[in-house]
Image: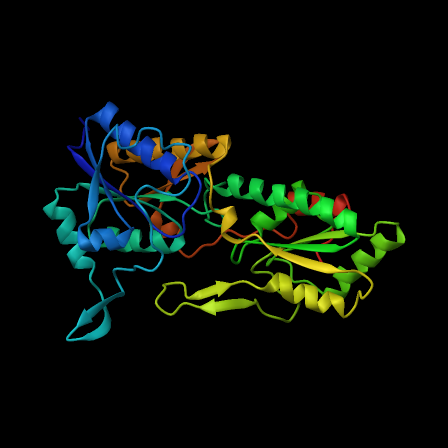
Length: 366
């Protein structure tokens, strides 16, 4: 039993899937049951499940053998904001605040605490539910590693492993054909994936949102390599990278999403722009896309995700409601959701990894 009388908790995952989500769910469930004798339920499809009261009981058997599996057994959605939710009234689709229905569902099922696993958008709603009096614990989730006040999010290292492996493979074909190979990776408006995979994967140029690039500087690096007898080049670019004085490249707008802008296409833009300057080499672009988010988490992320899940239950026992679990200085900690939302963590253009990259000859197009 918990010292505060909590008997039942709800768990949900929101936003994009991420390696390590199932490890978090497993850790929360096992810790809650084995240490505190709690009942655990999981809401399906994120906040949509909370609105529809669609849930499954989480037991030892239910979470057995899921630590190594990618994705989330609770499914997910990145379009359902219950404070601005699309419903049908009198044959017309309208957007309304339906958060009170979610609150009623939690009370009806006797859920004492809701554990929300997600990124900035999902945790923003978690904060808003906390403001309505719901006892909430947040767990940060994003492969982009762009959440503030936590050193690293689970799934990030799995994502950069995939990107690094892709760069290794592109090197062989680039060298064989004397081509310029461009790899476009995820990250939204933060360049963590591009920076770390490019650093580990021997990229010649790394383009990130935090350092706007000049295409002529990029071409200078390629021509410099040609003079040295290096007849191929590898460029890794974050999807949110932009040229000096330019803007991000938008793939499409998803109107019914809380974050409607879908980035994508900057790799092809750079290829087109480079062809006008460096006309003596073939240029090929690879967009890694959702491959970065899928598959099994690496060992590091399985351990980190499990630590996040265990810490979330301990915050419940300590009455630390309205907080998000954080990982700082090698230790699990916490921070209030009010201090986290809307504070994206971006790459420091003068940070140690950027400077180390420059020291070994990697260019950033600036």
